[in-house]
Length: 142
Image (tube, rainbow, N blue to C red; front, side, top):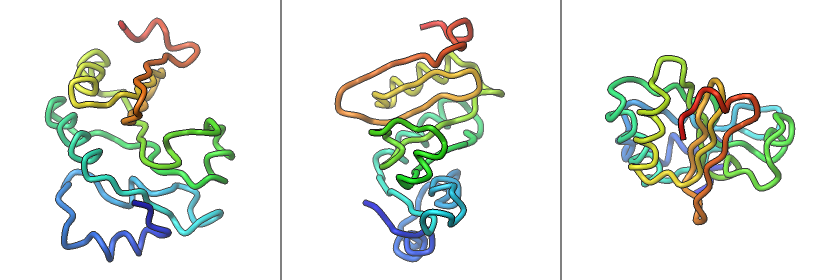
């Protein structure tokens, strides 16, 4: 469900928010109001799966990119049909075991997984896809 703004999402979801380790602020569009009012796409199942990955890893997940408005997605070089236009996250991998993070994401139902040097992209697309960003092949054992 798309919320046009972070404040609208926070108002609507405040009493139902059960994901203590994640916030709308970190998951909403990062354009800082340049192109939208910090839009946010909500999917409870997605957040449940992300919370399970966090539990598997045993520590925090740092979300570097969440939902993106179309203009911000273009600005950061996102794919035309990027899952970030709805709900997807890029999670920093610096302090995590790459193989443990990948295994957990797969086990928890993330079907779109992109492997980069400093982050892992996670989404729940209908047609599973696993890809490695250029220059990151040597870092991931797939």
